[in-house]
Image (cartoon, rainbow, N blue to C red; front, side, top):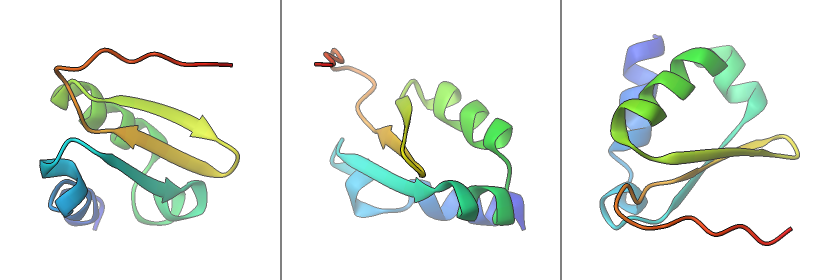
Length: 69
């Protein structure tokens, strides 16, 4: 189930437009694993942050990532 669930993430319209995709920690733990998600994010050259109970994936491999904290 892990591969199919992860593939659904990358089919979201937001991914193709270079936007942000969010997934809950619970969903990731239930349907895949944090390590598998991280591996897929790295393979695509995207950026990911853990914010609260959400994984936030920035789906723009060509853009700079500036964080304001």
